[in-house]
Amino acid sequence: MSKGEAQSNRWRRWLRDPLVAFLAIGAAVFGAEWALRDNSRTVVVTPAQAERLAALWATQMGRAPSATELDALIDDHVREEILVREAKRLRLDEDDVIVRRRLAQKLSFLSEDLAALEPPPTAALQRYFEANRQRYETPATVSFSHIYFSPDSRQDAAADARRALAGLNPQTWRSTGDPFMLGRTYAYSSMARVRKDFGDAFAEALAGLDVDAAWQGPLQSSYGFHLLRVDARTAAKGADYASVAVRVGADFDAQRRAEANRRYFDDLLARYEVQRP
Image (cartoon, rainbow, N blue to C red; front, side):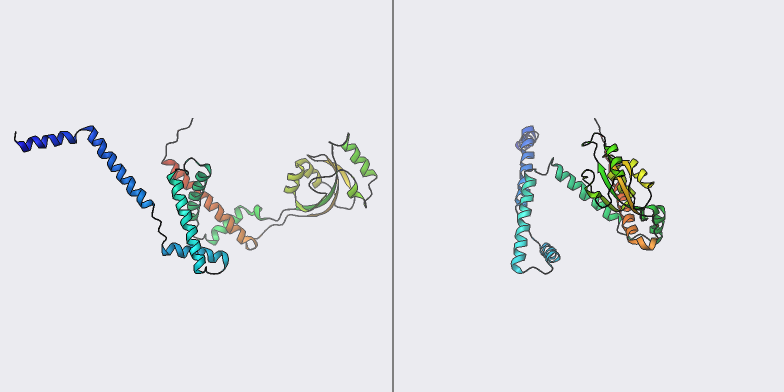
């Protein structure tokens, strides 16, 4: 074996040594990390970014920023950029609930925005209106006053309400009964609001009371007992498309965005394997 061949064999054995391979890989990783670290220390503010900062300022303030104000905006941008980079370097963005939710929200907004690029045709909006016509009706309303009798402060609130009704003075009714947290008078309230505030049974009983100046009751609610005076009722009123076209367009767009977001997530979900406990 010649001297050159022997030296070549020694080099091959040296290169096949696991320790040498480990050191080579470590050096490569260290070099890449150093290059990235060195690059991350450079903050470049491009003319386009400066124009964007100036445009945002003009939108908020109603005028273009002065040279001094633009310098301050750029300084704030640089400060934010450096803090964000350092936070990422320290991995402060990992396992943070707020950051995770914000990222998920931004991606959802992106998918929704892509779905709303094309304006919907009028025919589609009219079909949506017909399918959801009840949503755009003006609901029936009722105006009434009530006197409250609390079971928590009375031994028999229902009996006290009946006695008060028999001798009620229409001029002093506001000083009769017990304090009520939601107020004594409701003007043009929908039945949905009445049900929310007083309960279903109260709303159904109220619907059967006459509209006049006389006090009636007592009616039981989720709070206790009430004497009522029904002052007015208005019937539900249907809507035509032209009068609610703006609302229809907004609702249709919201539905389209939600559907796009759902489809987008379903496509993403199909790419993942989910393991549940």
